[in-house]
Length: 639
Image 1 (cartoon, rainbow, N blue to C red):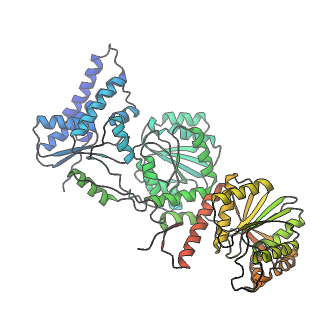
Image 2 (cartoon, one colour):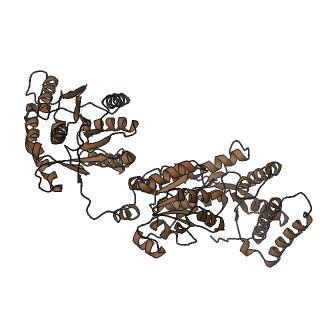
């Protein structure tokens, strides 16, 4: 296929001179009339586009082209009129609506002020030309729906089709390579924004928010053409001028690779190609939820309301301070674009539209894990050399809640820490969630197993100095995180008002352990994470954040664990437990026994739990005959 591209640069000297002469004529004609400068600019803009349509008709009249694709409905208007004058036949023509909704509305929002009566007339003209076109294309479903609303068209014509922009091809760099290339500081936090320096991009709001962060490490780089003077003046007024810079580049891959965060503050956006580029580059993205942006980014970006400075500042502050949240956004963004259509499939869709055929472009939601080279390598390059868990400083006189799925879990997992907390005059409450009735599958005991397990727990905990035991009596082996269990734990937390909570890990192998952890987490999140929360380890070691030296109470822990006679018929829990605590002493000097915990911060809970459960789901696949895992936390059915 032979393709021609026509732009203003292709106008002849005579045509350009005519445009300028006609504009000067309008200025002289209406010099003393009550017609605004904006109206004259609008007239010139429309005339300029009609002239492009005239040039397209001239080229089509040569018989060389089968299709004419107009960039907007005004060009199409000019093409149709002049094609009729030139008696062009056998050429199909159509339009792309690049703005969000009506082109005239987008024209208005881009700075061409259009009054109410003039807008009604222009919209009627736009609807008429779109009705006559062979195809009308727009980049998102939201654009299609908004266009129908703006032009009062119902039902939506079948030749109005959605074809998104293809996945961009960008050069990828390592973070170090990109920052060296751009001469950026290696220890600064860079926020980038991309787009024309036009009012609809709302860059002043971003400059104000970055200044309000009052973080000396933050740098803002705005990449795009336009008049920088107003933004520079604003940055001077806010004392931010030393930390803002501007650029124009053909190598956007360098900027996306070097940056820490991408932000779009647009007031309107039909698609937002820069948003897609940032997602594809593995960059955490914060965007205003305007126009077609939600259609493009899905759950791959943090969406906030447009023109809401409080939300913008709050989310910026959160993302700058929280690398875990940024990592989660990186991963989601890459999952979002993993199967985004490329240039070949989008080209086929255009050809189908030209021939009057339907073309449905499916955007796969989170269908693939993130690409290694874009996300994981970038993340790993920022790791510390060897971060080790720190020694946990235990409180004095505080209220502690320990949640154990079964009798014996609490002693084996954190019995030494409980004994030390009691020595620090802490009030310790142990909530045993299930009745333990399934704890004797071989039938060694002929009596009431649940009562036996409860008695064993009472005796064992007395060795640690713990008297307050709550038996919740859920069925053993059948506990699930439900609204009922969440409410139960909310009431327990409100009653006890603990300072610290210890609970099982979602990474643990036993299903009861995972579900108990999720139920307590749900209650804790509901109460805004008011308590410090720690996971303990039992069936599987944790990525520990803190350890406790239990040398002085190790024998008390062993004595307590010995009270669970029935479980010891099945496993040498004493020996196994001592080997795990011995291993954990690796992180402490002059210690032989230690217990390890993973503390969860409220503002990082979502990303941490997501990661742990994804790994737990992977174990379920590998260690059983479950279907294959295709994305973190989700399992496909076989076949």
